[in-house]
Image (cartoon, rainbow, N blue to C red; front, side, top):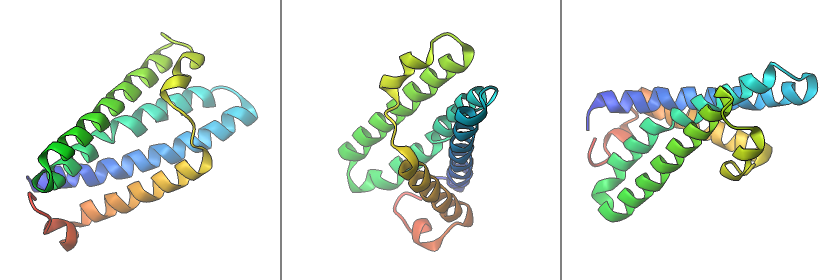
Length: 141
């Protein structure tokens, strides 16, 4: 695995976490003030999901030596979910589908999900960007 993927994973974690916060804030503003914050929320959600792709690929590379089948299945499910989520949100932003049609794809986890995911993604970004020795010693890096 290259250091380049390591850096991409770190920065994509930062961007995804920032988009998560933007999604949360714009949702509050949308329900308080209305448009254009709904569109901003939907657009930020696309970036939140799409920037998880490098993370999934990086984590697959790290865990592949420890369990090829399980790491492959986990990556396939995660990447599939990321692609479906990004596609559904993109269709919503483009006006091809309505919000009600997206609900089955995105069950809401509420405030706890926003806080926990953002915290995790910022931590992961910091670890990857800094080249933390613990992660750098992981097999396959």
